[in-house]
Amino acid sequence: MQSELTWFASAAVVALIVAALVRQRGYSMALPVMGVGVVVSLLPVGPDAPPDPGLVLILILAPLVFGEALGSSYLDIRRVRKQVMYLAVGLVVITTFVVAFIAHAMVGMPIALACALGAVLAPTDAVAVSSIARKVRLPRWAISILEGESLVNDGTGLTALRVAVVAATAGTITIAEVGWVFFLAVSVGVGIGLIGGWVLAWVIARSTDAVAANSLTLIAPFFLYYGAEHFEGSGILAVVVAALFIAHSQTSDPRQESRLDGAALWRHVTFILKALAFFLVGIEVPDTFLALSSQEREQVGLLVVVIVLALIISRVIFVMTMLGTSKDRASDDWRVVLVAAWSGARGPVSGMAAFSIPLTLDTGQPLPFRNLILATTFGVIVITLLLSSTMGPLARLLKVPPADDSILIRRVDIALAHAAAAQLDEAVEQSALQGDPLPRNVVEPLKRGVRLRLEALEESDADEGEFRSHQGMDLARLMLRAEQEELLRIRTEEGLPDGIVRPMLEQLEIRRLALESHSNGPQHS
Image (cartoon, rainbow, N blue to C red; front, top):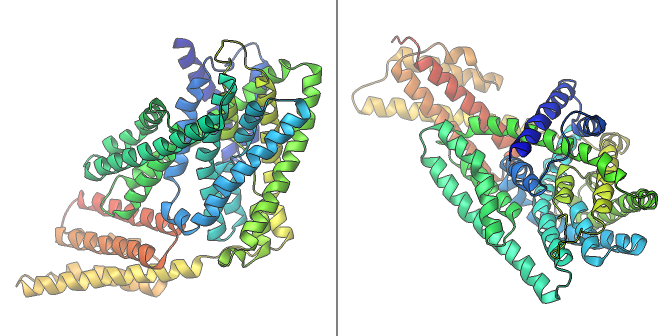
């Protein structure tokens, strides 16, 4: 245990230093952190490969996927659920068998292990795909499809990997047994995810301590994963489902004041875990390739090239067919569809999944082709990450029109300001009816602030600081609550994407915190 903790501590320090330096310069951390991992692995000092592959899924992959799912939107995914499920299930299955066929035909890899390699390489990387798609400024529906796919296909691919590993390590397995393992993994994983997500959301909603509530989410991925795996379910599916449930619950209730702190906390956590995951892939590369014979290295080189081409071709055909024949808005612009088809980078999830493949068979003998699987996975990750950087140039070459949400955001901002004004008028009227009218010097600054917002379509922070009476603070809170409720109403009734809703909810939460800080200061009427 001491060596495992030492490894994680030393690896985290090195990975974070590199990731922080790269981030400050505006670059993606993936390849630089992996490169430093390769260099560190070759040095006589520094962290080496982790001593226990099983710890990878628990300590890195489970919370990493949980954090990515917390930043996703169940509602946005639900709106494009057909496309997401086609990609996250259909394309994953096709990719798994395409890669398996190539590995079996080219190097004679047993079918079960070849399917394991296919399952490892089937999921796209949520981090690389979403960040590049946002930089390219693809339409919201396209970003929702890509993010939903890369999130859900983690669970699908890793569940398929679980089945393949069971078949590979057991030696023989029937079709009926494969079906049962898959059914159990999915049903138990989803069931525990729903139950765990509901319990956690219920506890968080009733907690008055944001620190305690957010601390609970930090440990959630571990007991969700362990719980699902204990009952032979998919731990990753449980983590994804629970995180989506919690995220939806928090953004649907304006009273949950821990949301803003939780979002900031998980941004830090996922940054650390992503750096650690890419670093782990890097330090595994030299040992993995050195363990191969010269013939196996040639096989890996050829395998990587053929598999990358197969991944690109199968994805482009599948996505162009699926979205191109769709009757909804996803088929409006073939250029967007083509760019979406090109976005198939593999990342740390594939690397972690490959590394988690057992070292031995059930008989205790070494698992054959394991190093070949690892080396092929690492090669595919590097090449697809390099290719993912061409999404921007491809979009510019095709003259893909950038997404512009300014008109929609402006309309929503106006609706929120009207909701706040209506709440203020209602509070003034009720106070007058009760025979205790609100002071003019309390109401007028608030009205002026709303009026300025409507005129300039922007918040007037200065005006919010002009009043500090208890009545003014209470009215301001009522107005903010009205804005939150109006924003959630627009999302529910008009389908406003969560990609717009969440930043606006954060801004409202920041304004609420600013009001709280004013209310804790000197008071005057």
